[in-house]
Image (cartoon, rainbow, N blue to C red; front, side, top):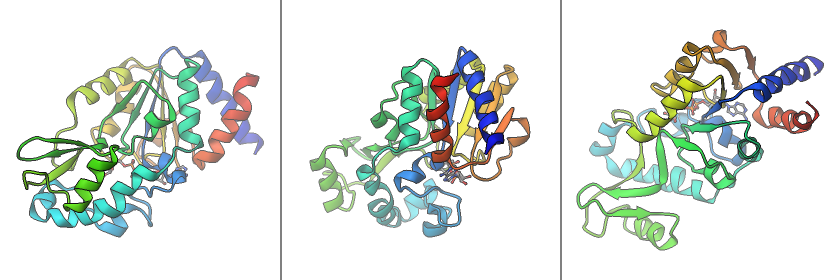
Length: 251
Ligand code: OAD
């Protein structure tokens, strides 16, 4: 306990002395909100298969993806941000983090109040028709219900696809360029709730390290970059954020 507190104080001192701290989040941040992550034993891949976000699979069998979307994506719209999201919004408000890069598609960082966000794997908020290009913003209940009632076919009859990056697709260029710029210019780079195995997202901490940034990793379970971290916290994120909230004003 005392040891963790000591390490958290070191982390906070680094954060407070930093000028350009950047955070990269992954699915673990939304687990306390009730959204399963991908690679844990009870994660989305165990339930729906590793290829559920594979672009070739989508074109081969769109209804398999739509069945998953009904249960695993549209339900994300009902989920609320948790303590981790709110703490990150507070850190941005206080000027302690300059940018938040997320691999998550649930939009919860924006709902919690972060403004400088790079959503590098896209978002479930927008669905596009693959033929006529019609755009459906599904925070609008009529649009959401229309897609659900028509098995995600556009009013022109064609397939729609959420604006998220599938394996086999390019990342959104503008969002990723922004994230890369933030990473390259950062002096402290923090990763939270990500296994750091998916590229090019996992390249971002490496850009930061090349610029001599300090790397802090908060994740239950190992990541391939643990050995480069100034401190690795193998801790539950809610517990970690509780410590931060308690200690942040005392330093
Ligand atoms: P993963 O499922 O690979 O990793 C999530 C990590 O969060 C795991 O190492 C968990 O142990 C950890 N974790 C879960 N709950 C936690 C908690 N309460 N406290 C601390 N750690 C916790 O998810 P990502 O790294 O986000 O891409 O996956 C990256 C990308 O792979 C996703 O964006 C998605 C996926 O394929 C696309 O869909 C394009």
